[in-house]
Length: 302
Image (cartoon, rainbow, N blue to C red):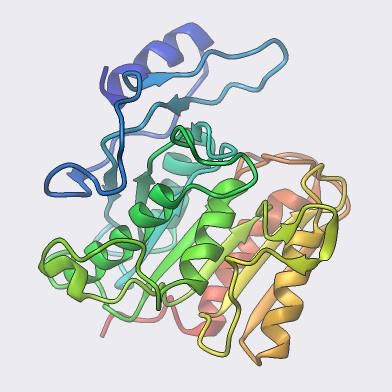
């Protein structure tokens, strides 16, 4: 079942008034052939069922064919900036609308092309639960390289390719932003000649950035250096995924004199996405837009 078909089914089950984020202008396979790193087949892609009390979110799982879903910025607003979006889901599912297509539509409203990355989940057999899945990093690195390699065709500035991730997708974004000097796969074609370093990163309630039980110690794969791109963080104090994840990476960025902005809200919990609420955490998109403007990412396309 294709993503659009799954969305229609889930929307129908959710009832009237439920909108999931719209259709992309273009869907591109991420790899020319079989993605690297696969050792055995997994079940067919599907939408994970909702559990009692869960909010209405389209949850995709069993992703074996990674894709880029491209939402171009309107021509009259386009800044030449693009952001690859990594939905969260504990590396088990992808919160496809809440942290994907809805985010792309917001980015379009501020002149940014949103590109939702359908990366491989869940963890493949043999991947320890306490380690992030390398196949997801492969997909993220390839996505940044692909967008940069297509900058001219997509009317983008090749030095304004950012990445934005939520929860596990926030970890994937941080991993990609600090692991660009170690590509996780052998180059497969000319796309991989383009750099896989995002020019900036936005991390919203990122998970797994610190060692379990050691909130003041960064996870070994998050290798912050002076070459790490500028970062923006948004997190809630009452998030069961501790805000220490954002705080510690922010402090490491400061240590290396990398520009960064950190917003810790008193309330919001986990998984608030962009959906409006009475909590101040729902203002993070406006703060992020102001940060991108101040950093020069929303200026006129060169």
